[in-house]
Amino acid sequence: MEKWYLMTVVVLIGLTVRWTVSLNSYSGAGKPPMFGDYEAQRHWQEITFNLPIKQWYFNSSDNNLQYWGLDYPPLTAYHSLLCAHVAKFINPDWIALHTSRGYESQAHKLFMRTTVLIADLLIYIPAVVLYCCCLKEISTKKKIANALCILLYPGLILIDYGHFQYNSVSLGFALWGVLGVSYDWDLLGSLAFCLALNYKQMELYHSLPFFCFLLGKCFKKGLKGKGFALLLKLACTVAGSFILCWLPFFTDKEQTLQVLRRLFPVDRGLFEDKVANVWCSFSVFLKIKDILPRDIQIIISFCFTFLSLLPACVKLILQPSPKGFKFTLVGCALSFFLFSFQVHEKSILLVSLPVCLVLNEIPFMSTWFLLVSTFSMLPLLLKDGLLLPSLVTVMAFFIACATCFSIFEKICEEELQLKSFSISVRKYLPSFTFLPRIIQYLFFLSVITMALLTLMTITLDPPQKLPDLFSVLVCFVSCLNFLFFLVYFNIIIMWDSKTERNQKKVN
Image: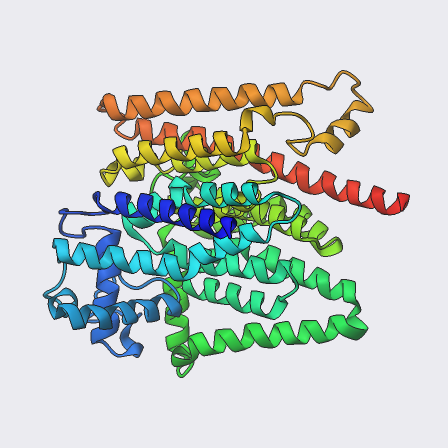
């Protein structure tokens, strides 16, 4: 009984922080003619309510795709339509065709913020609570602490409740998918992840780990028996869910192709805004976008992404386990973020979700990563006028993690899950005992650098010849951190597999 009482308190704290952040500014507030993501979400409600389905993704006099044209999968469009029906009941002016463009009022802001909160309450927060309650071999106190820290993660709060988006919907469905496949409810887990993928195409970041984990399960059961039956059931579940979501767009080939063109806009180039990935950071030294043709950029991007995630995915197929699945989710999502084509700064949330899921296992490294992920979005958050809520939520999250997990007391090889790796290295370098100390120094260097850059960004004006200097530095520093984390998580994945094999041989 006490557990549920404390968990309720944790959820209320999470909701309070979310609603407090929502009282602040949002993307594009009072900035015509395009406004921002807040207007994009409102405009999608306007379009889906007033136009027939066949016109949602097509350019027309009533649907100018240059003005926040719909570029997410059908499930997002259906969600916008549902919100539009509620908006119509409250105030039809909010979604009136053409005349509602750039609509801003306190009442409408309250409505829009409430839609995010309701989606969070229905999908994301219950998944977080259930995930933490299902954690094994830890105390009730630790489960509640884990839930508190996940719900206080500032990146998701600032983007959904500050900047304004519905990331909690796709991430929530993905988390339900993780729960399903981790506890052998494979069909329900697959269905949940298909819903996530049909809500936001960026969930492709998580698709390979899901595929490899489930395929590994089928191989483990035997493809001539139960494994083959499971594979057929999974194929039917995935096909059925996609057909249901896309059914209105399958009536015409051009409809389907147009939706796909909107979902994967390769014409936008390798990257747009300042994003903390390899291509944007490397462009400081070499302008790849200007030197290489677009098709070559796509090929190079694909090769780097595929090669960086391949070892982890192969390992997951050969040795499927819930722990390996979670770490592979982190590694694959981070590979996509760092190397794939047309990445947005907010896509780091797709890496942050699986990092939250291993917060209990490697609290120090997870806390560090989640702080960097929020810092990497600093230029966007400052642009939206969210400096104060950013500073407050980051401090609250850091204090919560430091208090609940005593992160500074857990910087040893075993707690960092680097023991088997260090033992392997010490066979050749017996003096290799300083890795935890190096990681600790790197953490403090990273924190100091992020703090100085934040201070410089908010207090100094950049040079006239380099107006984007601070934004570029934020991206570059964040990218260096992410590359370090990519190596770190892949070490855990690969050396953990060696440990499992050795244990099986001993047994």
